[in-house]
Length: 397
Ligand SMILES: Cc1ncc(COP(=O)(O)O)c(C=O)c1O
Figure 1 (spheres, helix red, strand yellow):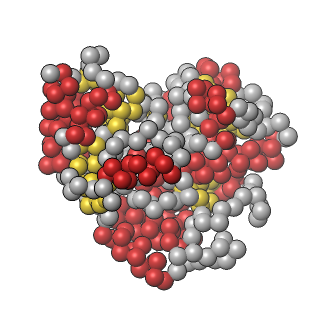
Figure 2 (cartoon, rainbow, N blue to C red):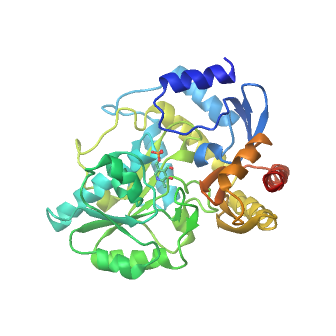
Figure 3 (cartoon, protein in one colour):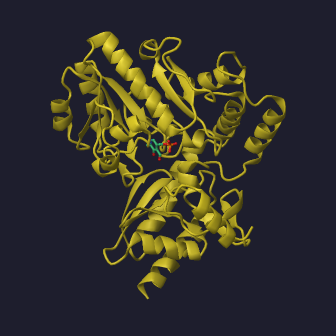
């Protein structure tokens, strides 16, 4: 199939919910992607922070192939040997003392969290205790409840009425949060670093202050680690940069390195709010996805990915900061945004980079997001910087 055949058929038969970039990929290996014409690209977006071990990692690919030939799926009406092992591994990474529900995406992991905290809130505080407070600028997913949780009112307009019970406060404003936490609030839900909202880290001390306030008001703290989880920011989870323990942690993206899987961890007392029948998922935690995730965690632990993200992230951030055309760099580990000089449009620079063989995206009209594989080499980092510099020069010329 040619690139133009694929684009034409896609336009005819796929519902157009994305403004796609006109490139058609057919293969990936490590940090590289290849299009239908054989052109090579450095992938510094990793399918939106998903392919953290690089494309087609052999250990993960072998585990998936072996499991596909052994047992792909049994219903959650029965046990399998892989789901509980994965749950135990995730519990240990988060800090212990909790249990996990498995889903298939980030939105579903958050949907589970929202249902769980509502149930917990109502059991402990009465019928009206179901409100969830999130940050303005946050992103939590595209299902109706996670869209309502997402603090971007412009995304809500077309889908009213959305589920009731969500409030949004300015990020970093602890006074605003304090004012929002009345007796009807059951939970605060936060990303430890706004990903889709522009790669904005939380202000120093904010998460600790939120935790203290949640304790005082007996409100559950949910941390959405869908984009930041599994070493991306230089710790296993973004919240681990702060001195806090959340009550609920949601995850997805990098957990499967491309295999769709999501997970919602909750400390035991909160998890107890669910009973058989409270929630479910046909595919969640099935053998194929769980085996892939176990292989991902094996490689991540063997490769010490948080440490690698810290070291490579520091190198990439320093190189970006030195680029002509970059006004500032923000983020953590290997989840970075380069804020461009005011004469540059991030979409135009991103398109020029793609032409030159580097995949990044315009996370805002003025900032470029970089999220390469956590196993990225120094040579690849240097090559990406060279391409970005050339793209900026070309755009300015
Ligand atoms: C922080 C965060 N939460 C939730 C989601 C939704 O995840 P999914 O697209 O897998 O439903 C995303 C997706 O980008 C995200 O970044």
